[in-house]
Every structure is written in structure tokens, then in C-alpha cells.
Image (cartoon, rainbow, N blue to C red):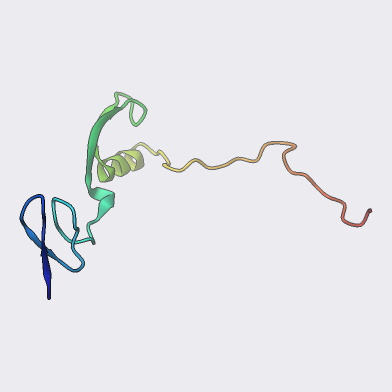
Length: 86
């Protein structure tokens, strides 16, 4: 297997590995990867510092929150066409 030397850090990486520093496999689980910490005041009654997507997902499940916005139809928004009339 051929490897390539990184210009930035001098480390070697091969086929299927992340070509940017830090190197590793491309199969990293991004759902639980650390993210830049932020304070979410709406995730609980006191608010929480969020440091990973996994932590956010667990807190939302604990507090009965749903991540995705469910689209609600508005009254009068559906248009019916009478295809029989021309």
C-alpha cells in the first residue's frame, strides 16, 4: 500500500485516511464528534453547555425535545384544481 507524506505535519497517511491534519480514518463517527462548545438555554430549564452532538441528542431525548421541525399545514394553504373544467 502506498503512503503519502503530509506537507504540514510530516506524518504519513494512506488510501482511505483523512488527508488533512489530524489524520485518521474517514469512517469517523461525526455524530458524537466534539463540536465548539455553546450554551443552549432552551434545551433544559436551566440551560446547558453543549460540547458534542451526542450530548445534545441525549439531553434532547431526556427533556422530550425533537430535533427536527415538523411542518404543519396551514389552513387554506392547499389549492385544489378542478381538472374536469377547462
